[in-house]
Image (tube, rainbow, N blue to C red; front, side, top):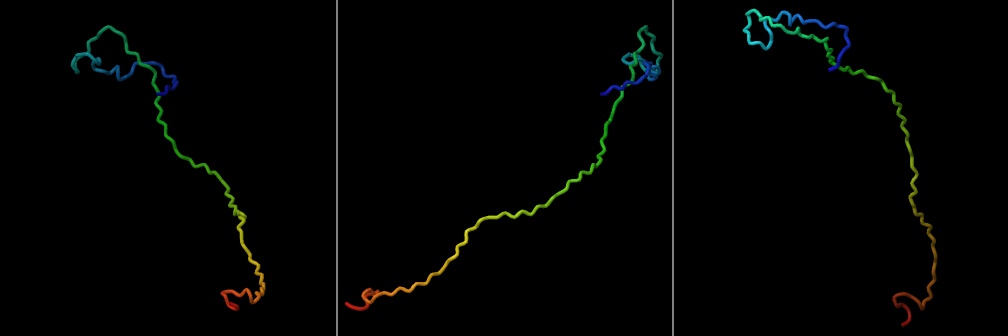
Length: 102
């Protein structure tokens, strides 16, 4: 509980002055209070109670976005074939599959 620093002077509360009987006494209500010599109650300065509440307030933030399209170069092997045509003459003595002389 927070205390506020008010300039209120200590005083006897009206509720205490108008009480028909003292709190804690065994005297039934409606009967005249018994006057006892004693000390007057001490009433302290009021305490301040704070109930905090919060209200949302939007604060605009502007955030630019830059879209970057990136192209990555990836080396991929590709094979090219070069055809070479050759003519080979085979002499008759070396014919395949046993044709020719026996």
